Image (cartoon, rainbow, N blue to C red; front, side, top):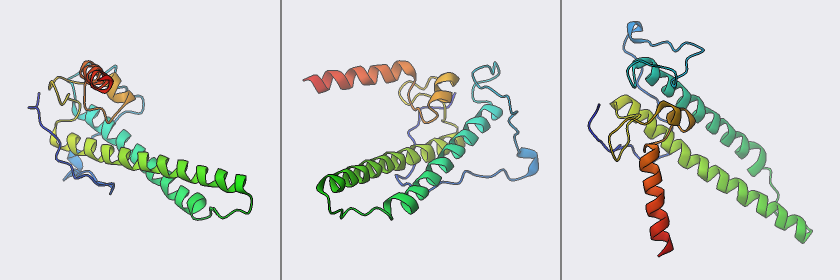
Length: 165
C-alpha cells in the first residue's frame, strides 16, 4: 500500500493527458465484461487501474463535449433581451442555471484530472485520511472519490456538527 500522499495536481480545468506506455509490451487490455467489484486479485492491479483510467477519460471527454455543445448551441444563441418581462426572466434563469451546471462540470473535470494523476503516481484508490483502500464498488460508483465510505461519513458528520454551531 502506498504511503498517504496528497495530490499536488494543479487546479485547472485543462485536460490532462495521462502518460502513455513507452512500448507496446506495456499496454494493458481491459476485458469488455470486466467488473472491478468482482476482481478478486490484488487491489489496484494493472487491469483495475486501466479500467478506472479509461472510465475517467471517457467521463471527462463526455463532459467536455457537452460543455462545447452548450457553448455553441445554448449560450451563444441565447437572446436575453426579450420584449416580454416574463420571457426575459425565464431566459435569464435558464442561462444562469446553465452557467452553474457548466461551473460544476468544470470543477468535476478538475477532480477527474487529479484522479488520473493519482493513478499515475500510485495513490489512486486509497483513502486520503486513512491510507486504506477505497472499495472498488465505491470507486466504480464515484471514480473521483478520495475518501473511504467511513472517512466520508466522518467528514460529513463533522461538517454537519460545525455547520449547526
